[in-house]
Image 1 (cartoon, rainbow, N blue to C red):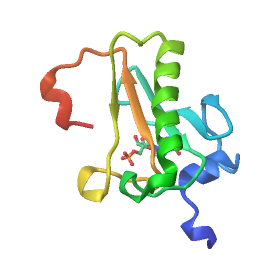
Image 2: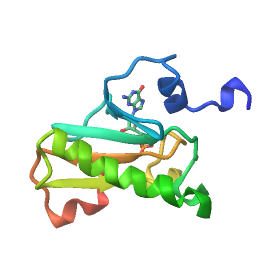
Image 3: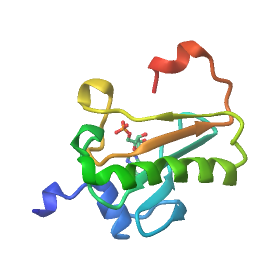
Length: 119
Ligand code: 5GP
């Protein structure tokens, strides 16, 4: 893989770019979003550089489940366990800008059903 294909999030995982790290383990890292869209806005990022959700294969099932579990854990750590939202943008047409799978964990704001299509 050439340097230009290495994602921004892989560079953060490799400590080449600084980030505010909330949590990390052998499979993923959680950072605060640089441009938060809610008072709590974290990104759960697998160390494996899957570009998009649809690029995950059957063998990635364990990782995908782990990412969801971690999202709940960090929500609890930040005190938003009773009201938070998870968002995954899949593809440029859905607003994905960083092509390394990540879950947005958003909380500490008032949510309305009509917010579902935003981010
Ligand atoms: P996407 O639009 O791909 O679903 O989300 C990408 C997210 O990454 C955005 O919310 C954006 O603010 C965040 N982001 C982009 N560059 C950086 C960075 O250098 N550091 C951090 N912590 N977040 C970033």
